[in-house]
Image (cartoon, one colour):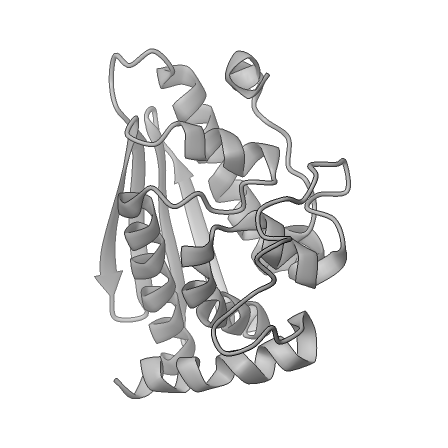
Length: 199
């Protein structure tokens, strides 16, 4: 309760300082979801990246995401590639940051189950969004963070693409932690096995 309340109160302050406040709980609806996909990513820096990359439902998740960026130096992440996708452990020795990780993963699972398209202006994320229903995202909380198993369903039309996209996504999330918002604003390439799906 305390963490979620605090994250909620952080949202308006962050929007004022970094993104641009659009009124209580609202973003510029005319621009929402209409950013072009260019080689530079979602375009227009942080503000436009947030507008163009996520559906309106994702705005509720942004305080957590931005807090993770602000605390990325406290986060460790281990990726193990498997035959069907990846197993990851994202964790922190800082209790606050560990809770942020858990909240974020729960929010991403909620988005996945609701069919919300996350960062859809990025080719890699758009491809992964289009594979909805062809892979499983299975989180398990640990004392210091979250283990996540992401695996493609067997014998689906895009099984190879799903595996490669899962692995590319895991590597990209690690790059977000390493480089911060500058990496998040970039466009990320689609695996070769997904070229037909991405075209």
